[in-house]
Length: 299
Length: 320
Image (cartoon, rainbow over all chains, first blue to last red; front, side, top):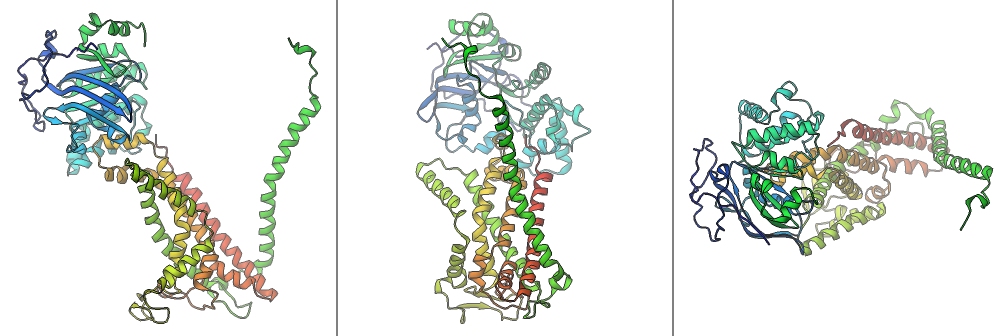
């Protein structure tokens, strides 16, 4: 197996001051039991980022079927990471471990290290409700709730916070603005969210995910059910959100990965074949298998 | 090598005839049930309509057919159905939520879970008279553990108070309602389960991904989405409870009741029971009174069913 992990700058001090007070970014990720494979720092954008999610020797099973084999990767904070690979290669499985959605699947289990800053995400002690507030998720098929547009966005905040009506209104507006949907829906907030177009529904789901103030956004093929125009809007949105959130996107569309991401990880049959700066992966992949996939020779 | 041109074709006329004949056969079968229903309704209306007036709803049963009315029986039905609905709905919906939303992962618990599911599916097929006998021992007599019918082991208030309560419950409204609850509980559970199952999983995942607890997910997402389905099933179940005679017969017995129930432990009669009583009498006049009673009962049941259809059409919104 040819696993290449990306080396971050050894000092993990954030380069930009945290404006968001709710984020408890711990800068001392010093107790790394697992040694880092030293690979040259190739990209300034990535080099300046600090590691948010640390993955070492991560394996996952559904019953007796092993879906993921010994993943090693560092996911940089406030950057866009893309997971690519053919169907069934385990990229969605891995994504769903990060907010523990796999807890819902009977027989799903995992071993190894999966840390968000200093928190062990595989620990039994972790509160998944808190975790999912920190790690938002957008699904493949837009899944707006059968409620009004307003209530869709207000749903998350109402779960977590005691809020005054005014503050809630403001938060809903802020989230919808951030998701680039406000101008389209501001006059019909009370209408059913199911009346929106597919692309609008997906942006509503993004607004819903960011309304609880997450640090990380997981996107599981967010554009695969959308037309090219809506896809372009979502991609623009991802570029806008990149400054504030750590985004991990699973995609089948290699052009999309090339367009939106800073770091790309290529999965094949449950193994992480190669990961690195997106430019590098797409121009000079070190692994021939990766090259075959990105050049469209299979998959 | 088979040459298609050389093959003997099937008769064309025969083919067309068979095709038509089968269609008309199906039409006849379908109309049979409708015709039977029409004949039934027609004869009932012919027999019962002349007895049909406002007094019939007010007056108590009487030894004279002209004076006999459905008043106490209607109120008795209202009482037992209220008790039945108020107990069966929370129990049934909560059970359905447990079965659908709290699927166990542990193998032993899963086995128990499946056993419970099997049990409930089977209970839906148990004849209602059996529930009557269960109700008689469990609710009316309470297995004889706490006093007997003449000397209740525990009582609160006197028989004149509206809040009178006793243990065992005796042959009263409360025991009747609880027995009907047993009859319709499996139906309520199964239909609520189906309503919950119809809620797409993407909504559950969406709610959980926002950081909802299981309780928040059920209360704010799954249950509201399933409510129209649950209501439809429950209304149909309650309409079955209204028409049920056998278990009530075991609980209340054929008694001549001239008054509406005043408290939960009071004796009662119900519409199907009163009709049964009238229809069993030798006088021809009483049979006409029974026909009028059946008309009223049918009207009530049709209203309930129509409400169920209305709820389904009106409130069932698309969920995706």
